[in-house]
Length: 165
Image 1 (cartoon, one colour):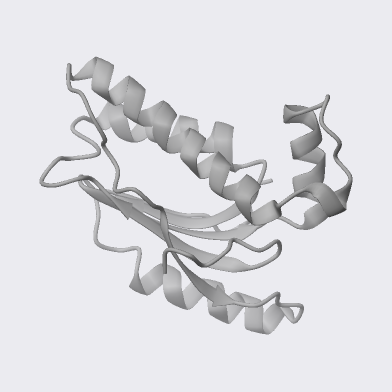
Image 2: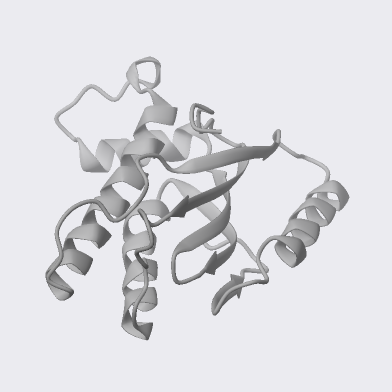
């Protein structure tokens, strides 16, 4: 669950929790800001199909983008680095984007609420849902069923019927 690499083209249920009894989201603006940061850091590297943000944890259903899309985004972030596809560790790159998201949000949250220290548990938890799917009927069945079972218990639930690009 913690060491599963985020491979290109693969679907994952991603989730994380606040440390201790803390809340990740104390006000409505916190939810919006987290989604803004998510859009900034994660949309270039994942497709998002569903999400649920609850006061102390969240769930997101994603598909990691294909290697060529990841390589293009890597090149925009690090233009001076060699971007040959053999040299890019795609799972580490996606994990770094999650790390950037969590750090960015935690810094703003800590400033806003005059707190210090970690906000999220150490690692983003993830479960691989399935391999690459090429048959639309299977893809539709897979995406619809989880979004109605694991993403219904929170105040900020979103179902994205079409992939956001």
